[in-house]
Image 1: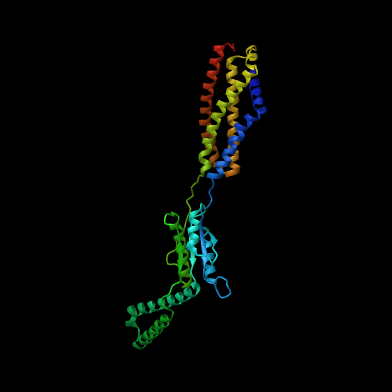
Image 2: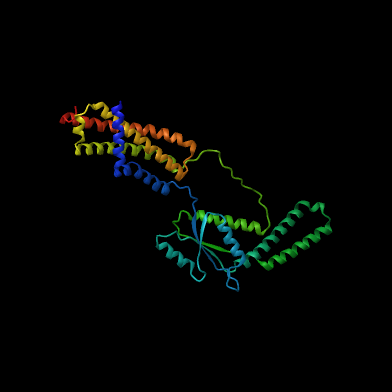
Length: 343
C-alpha cells in the first residue's frame, strides 16, 4: 500500500503542476456556477417599468401638489419602476416609438391637466354624498323616533347640501393608462394603479378600511435555483473530470514514456488502478467542497441544506465518476495487455 499512496501523491502533484488541469477541474466549474447562479439564481423583486407624464402643471410651471403625492404613492409600492416623460411631448407618439425598439414595454400613465382641481371638487362632492346618504338612511330607519319639527329641519339641511353639491358637479379626476394590447404585464400594472387610486380616494374621504388584509408567511424552508442545480453541477463535473483527467494523465504518461518505465518497476496493475481511483476520488471530493463553499459564500445556500446537498451530490457523483473511471481504466488495461506494455 505504501507504493500505492506514493503513486497517489505523485499523481496529485502532477495534477497540481498542470495549469490546464487545475483550471478545467476546479476553476471552470466554479466560473460556470457563479455565472449561471448570478443569472438564474437570483431572487430579486420583479419590477414593472411605467412611464409617467404629469400634465397637471400650476402657474409657476411646477407639478401640482396632489399630482406629486399620487406619483409618490405609486413609487412607494416598490413594484413599479417609474420614469418621467416631459410634458411637452405626445404620450401616444412616445409610446409608439417605444414599441418599435427593444427596450422596456410601452406603458405610460398620463396625469391629465386639471387633476388637482377636479380631485378636490370630486372629494368635496363625495363627502356631501356620504352625508346626504347618511341622512336618508337615518330618516328611513328612525323617522318615527324623531320629532316632526326636527325632521323638517333635517330635510331642509339635506336640500341645502344637495344645492352645494350641484355647484361642484359630478366631475372626477382622470388618469390615462396607455399600453400595448399584447403586454401580459399590463393588467398587473393597471391593478397596482387602481389600488393606489382607491387608497387615495379613501384617504381623501378620511374613511377607514372596513376590510383589512393581513399577510402571514408560512414557516417553511424555501429553495432558490442554486440549491437545485448545485448537485447537478457537482455530479456532472466530477464525472467528466474523472474521464478527461484520467485519459489526459494516461496519454501524457504514454507520450513521455513513463508507462514503459512503470512496466519495469515492481508496481502491479492493481496498485496502478487503485492509485488512479483514489486520486480521482480525492479530486472529486475537493471539487465538491469548493463548489459548496462557493455556493454558500456567493448565494447563501442554507446551512441546514448543505449536508443534504453534499450527501446527494457525493452519492451520485461518486457512482458516476467510479463507473466512468472503471470503464476508462478497463479500456486502458485492455490496451496495455494487448500491446504488452504492462506486466
